[in-house]
Amino acid sequence: MTEYKLALVGFGGVNRALAQLIAERNEQWKTELGFTLKIVGVTDLFLGSVIGRQGLDANVLAQLPAVKGALAQLSGGDATALNEAVIKDSGADIIVEATFTNPVDGEPATSFCRWALEGGQHVVTTNKGPIALHGAELKALARRKHVAFEYEGSVMSGTPVIRLARQALAGSSIVGFEGILNGTSNFVLTSMEGGLGFAEAVEKAQALGYAEADPTADVEGHDVRLKVVILANELLDAKLKVSDVTCSGISSLSLGDIEKARQDGARWKLIGSAMRNADGSISASVEPRLLNNDHPLASIGGATNAVSFTSELLGAVTVSGPGAGRTETAFALLSDIISIHQSIARNQE
Ligand code: HSE
Image (cartoon, rainbow, N blue to C red; front, side):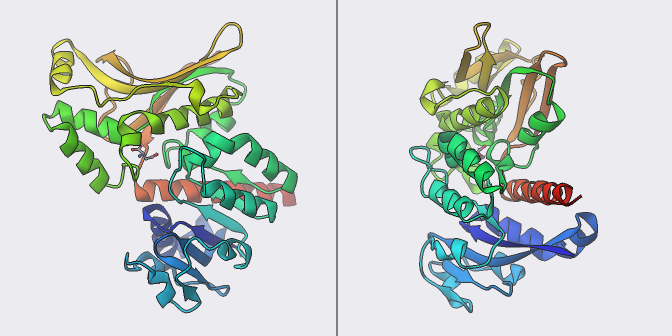
């Protein structure tokens, strides 16, 4: 039976949810997926670090108290924050990077990815920073080292948009996309339609685990801007930088604007989009748009995300599903690991 050894970098909600899934489902995965997962190291800014080459108890990790230095209480643990030894010395095959998104320089996540890839380890990540800011470099490094670098969860969490577009829509000639790519802002807009105030709705989204550490990134469109860069570079072969995408958010919308839209048979949505122009250039933006109620994206409510790809051969193909949430994003990591497993199996045929 194939067993992959994982080192978890960042142990907030997402990697904790992955540990929970491993605790509950490893046996089932043996038959369902043909592999099992073993956690051999965890490192976190707040909780400290632990290495257990023989395997750490996923259930103990999932239940770990959220107190400073908690990993130091485990055998093999210490209070060192974000310790690179967990990547380099734990014997992990796959590094599962789920630290916070830094939209300015992508650090420290980018360095973790780089060290792991340079050392010949596969990397799966949910982190938008390294992909949006350093994706081309990291992908080239992974190719050079013959290892995988997968990041399905960086856009729409576990809803499979990157792999769907890259694999199932390959050859359809995608020319653009538009989407609701931020669960928090869509949740806020839907809550405001129900009469809740902006600040209260943001707090609720934070409590449900949708929002970024700094929810300004959600409501001002900065989070969507990173996702537009990731999708455009991946699917339209664009070479966009974050600054190439014009960006405005939803914080200027009032309850009055939302009510006025309702009366007019329309809804405000935060839309991230990119389109290839006739001259081959790419235009990309993030902005609140007033959509008539019969627009396919108008009915997407709550934290749900949706993206509509426009392709030459199929026209519009729209996918909707969760775009945030701990377990949903942990599922994206699992889907990346499955993809690595399938690719290793293909190479062995
Ligand atoms: N804060 C993001 C959202 C999480 O609300 O969609 C996923 O990137």
